[in-house]
Length: 503
Ligand SMILES: NC(=O)C1=CN([C@@H]2O[C@H](COP(=O)(O)OP(=O)(O)OC[C@H]3O[C@@H](n4cnc5c(N)ncnc54)[C@H](OP(=O)(O)O)[C@@H]3O)[C@@H](O)[C@H]2O)C=CC1
Ligand SMILES: O=C1O[C@H](COP(=O)(O)O)[C@@H](O)[C@H](O)[C@H]1O
Image 1 (spheres, rainbow, N blue to C red):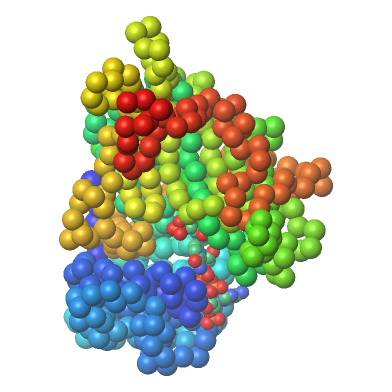
Image 2: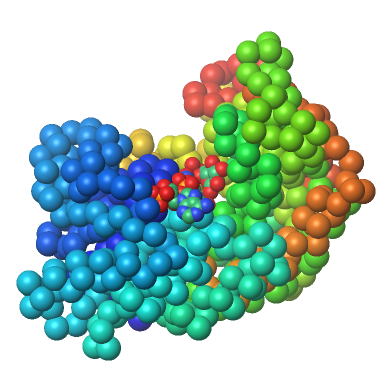
């Protein structure tokens, strides 16, 4: 794999250090890496924001958000905090960047660093990405013999046009090699496992096509609504929030051809190729919804959020039909679905296989491979097996790899942000979004988004907070070839002799 790790004396600068993402994800991820010995012990971490905070104050904020679950974690806190300092300054003026540069220079000369390596994390609203990028380039870029990497948070644009504009603005500042566009789903353990599951198992590899697979679903469910973030969400909607990025990334990894190696460019080349084979998303192949009060009235509807417009048509639930027109996938219906305020929080992939020939069987159900991304990572395959004992009939059961049952707690499974910051530090681009990938993904979603945001778009169907989603969901899935298992024919987790009323 063509990776090129930063060395022992790297400076990591977190822009937007006073903000929500930095507090909840970036600093805790840096701590997790430090705790596990994955950051060099003497790395230099600097928080940067406009807020006037002392180093002590930023350290206090950080420590309040660290999960100190065990003695190992508690023992590491002080050492971690000592690595952190803070620089306060504006985003659009040189002075703060000059101060920042001096702080890095001082660290580098104290440690006799001959090739300064600097990693910048932009935990900032996109409106200031370019300004900050430009000031980094002018005032805090490492000297000629050094190197820079810069992590940019989503959203990378609002549609195709704005995404291209952002690309155009950043391109003169940083090379594609230097830019790391983060999509944190690519750092999730099970998402990283997809290539191994697919290409490392011949039985799956052989059946991974339209001859054997009858439908694919990727579903993202959250059991909570916008809860005060409505002001932000109202401009975005569920499609931009999680589909154009997280869910599409998962689908791409699931459907791309075999890369020649784990080399980041080999993987990203294949992702782009399959994305180009997607057909235009049709406005007639969608199910869109907006949540209303829960049935018992205890949970608010989307429009009850004071930060959203009274007549907002913002989509909080979407199921979208996707088709891929290549030799492997032509004719396989794919459904991407995502929603807020549903009955549970879960993200999973369901691959349903075609029915086997009946002949010798009176009743036989379909195989289904389920890959649960979260919570509690699992891969299980629904298979038909003889009901144990004197019965000669079949029932649907599972081959089950649930991580919590199979792997001891001693495994450190990094959080997504931990995995991705580590990748960036190591110079591994595989799990970051490339410019052409971004462009194709926006080209795919922009026409549908334009329709949804036009005056012609009817109000999305209501669904109650805490429900499974809009009423038409079952029918929508059936229309896309998904066969629900016969009622009572499948029991989880323990199958009892009365399955299907038989013994
Ligand atoms: N929060 C989350 O869970 C997630 C966030 N993201 C993305 O990460 C980035 C940061 O998100 P988040 O931390 O929530 O954002 P915040 O709104 O908390 O902003 C981060 C910091 O940026 C500064 N800031 C805020 N608004 C502006 C502004 N209009 N102009 C200049 N500076 C501003 C503030 O620092 P100060 O005033 O001190 O300079 C603030 O503390 C965004 O791109 C977001 O989309 C992505 C996934 C999840
Ligand atoms: O990017 C986002 O993702 C989160 C879901 O991330 P997860 O790791 O908790 O599954 C989502 O809640 C948020 O709205 C969105 O902006």
